[in-house]
Image 1: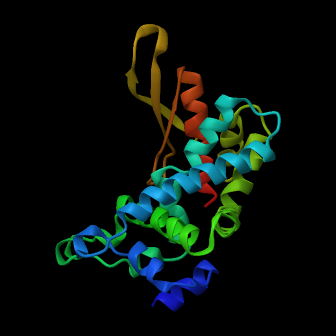
Image 2: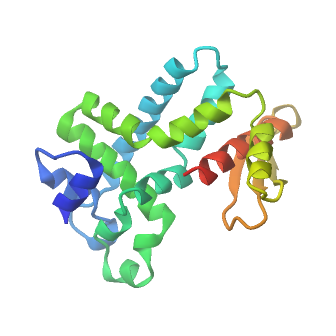
Length: 221
């Protein structure tokens, strides 16, 4: 099974033990993937930040931060993992297996981070950078299309209209922080699309833009 997954990942491990540990959930016992998940989280955050920095030289720090957050979110990592059918390769304990843990986004996304950590340890930073950019290619292209416009909400609306889908509905889910430093969390819903996206920002408008960008990534996966 590890050889089959390696082919899907388009990466051959020098030491297959790294991949085995990356695929082992803590419920299985023994060596598990939490430390690799920690490492992979740091690596993917840096690589995506670096790629966005060079790809969008005129983008503000706020834009770059929002785009990176969308690309390394649990949902985005779960989408990434779905490209490789990662869930079917995860080693789970009996309880997690019975409860459908191999289909749970939280477990699948964390395992994806662990796989990235495994590639980093096995092949070094350049190998990890190459694979991350390769795996994220479709998402980055979708982001590029949306980012070329000033307002992701407009891009999303045009995208939905061109496909005769309902217009998006934005809901404020949470407002936190002091009055002068509020953080808005907004969800974006499209009738007929079972999943919704989340966005956050220092204003409702920015949070809605962030949620619109996340929805575009979701629809174009």
